[in-house]
Image 1 (cartoon, protein in one colour):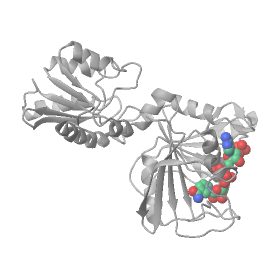
Image 2: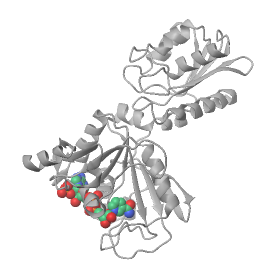
Image 3: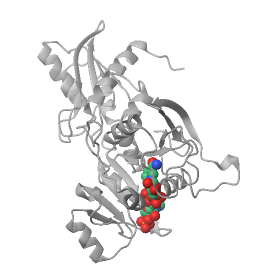
Length: 369
Ligand SMILES: NC(=O)c1ccc[n+]([C@@H]2O[C@H](COP(=O)([O-])OP(=O)(O)OC[C@H]3O[C@@H](n4cnc5c(N)ncnc54)[C@H](OP(=O)(O)O)[C@@H]3O)[C@@H](O)[C@H]2O)c1
């Protein structure tokens, strides 16, 4: 039986909230937070991994303790992710904690990066440091779900996002879909974009809506824009091509490719499957390029394709209190003969988003982190 250590969880929650401060700049490194505590219950240093290539959370917390004039010898370090054991852009953290005389390390979870994968904790244990791990493992893994997906499945964490009416429709038969939901939901969707490294739509959405796919209604970084366009039919004047944009294609002639490259698009050729870009290959390519969290924003054909392939983790559905009638919807094109075959979500929940509802859930096909 696991006995919950309330004090450990308390400080781990503090470390988790610090870790979030790295949201904009730490990627593709994981967000990590660290709290140094001297008995009895006195915080002597706090830190987080603030930017890619910058000091890790442990080093930042040690620097904070030094600034405060605090002694860290004999302290407990609460870290949301196992301290690293290898030289990367910065020196390894596990030996540094040993050097500084840290007596105990509580780690949120083991690092899935094969360069670490338990070696950091081993260094600590071998040096006589008391190690407790995991602590609040679910929360600590969720914080870096894209990082965990990339290292364990070689694909990004995939969020499917759509705006629908109560009947699940995503557009009217005319193709019109602006706007199904209200301003609050749209601003929220931009916040979600900023939490992802890539935002993906099919070429059908580009042709119908000419979206920009940037973060505008809120602060935050715009993710890489990605278009699934098997035959390179995206118009060179498309607004999405005005910024950094990756077009994933299966075929299409050289002349089309050159025209798109002239307007700044990057074209990546991938294997085809069933006449379209192969989604497994697309996700592998995106992971290779450092896209760890991907938001798929539609339209209906692309969403159904991800659902059918079982390559999706989270559904984020902004649902308007409206009945849209005929038109393509979430799950269009999918057909099941038995209720038992229907796609199910776990941990489903709903919240208000202004006048709309946000319904979320984890796809059953999504493996545990
Ligand atoms: N309510 C919402 O949240 C929302 C969001 C987005 C769009 N929409 C609406 O949806 C409509 C557009 O629908 P849509 O279904 O045509 O757009 P889509 O899903 O964005 O694009 C579909 C196209 O993507 C390409 N594609 C490339 N690889 C694919 C793959 N593996 N699987 C499936 N498709 C692949 C296909 O063309 P190629 O194979 O030729 O490349 C396909 O025709 C518009 O009316 C738009 O306003 C609504």
